Length: 288
Image (cartoon, rainbow, N blue to C red):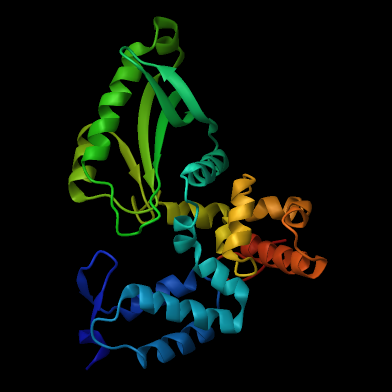
């Protein structure tokens, strides 16, 4: 069967035609050279079969990247790594908070605000210029779960209760109040349509095109520790429980790795991988 006609199965269960160019684009995010990417695509094309899943293709690509360098594998894994920021949603909230700080926001995690009717816990309360942002993070370990219209419906009512509860002084302090929802999965069409109608900003891996998580991650070179192939799942969980979410935290403090019992050689290897993942630019060169 011609590769251009081969049907593959997405995580949602939908069937789509295999698109080699999409695979090439995703591999380019790893920082691997064009020749390495070309050889990987050629190998994968020879292993494809009808109804292969996108997850299987991803796993094949990841293992092949690791054959060349664990560093390329780490960068390629960033999307999947966001799903491993669990089981609680707090590491994901902390990660999004760091992205916002890089974008020039001042922000605080887990703030309580008194609304007109009841009090509400806000995942991230951020400020930029004269605007106040109430940001909700929707984390899912299961990539098949989506944020449907119920999420923005509920958040809109909560947002209005909070804003209506602000006193006159607070309302005069800011020119505008905005609400965002950030998820590591995706939003349904109804959720997007409703959010547009009530001026709510939605952010997921590929949405919106000009301010998606993918864009922000690559722009700020901000990678979670779950991208690292030099750490086991148990070691990553130990670090997450210590509120260590970012590779940059390990760059700055090697002692964090000592606390989870790693040997000096292992620590050197993890730090080396962290440096590469954090500083490799989009054209495959190291930033100095």
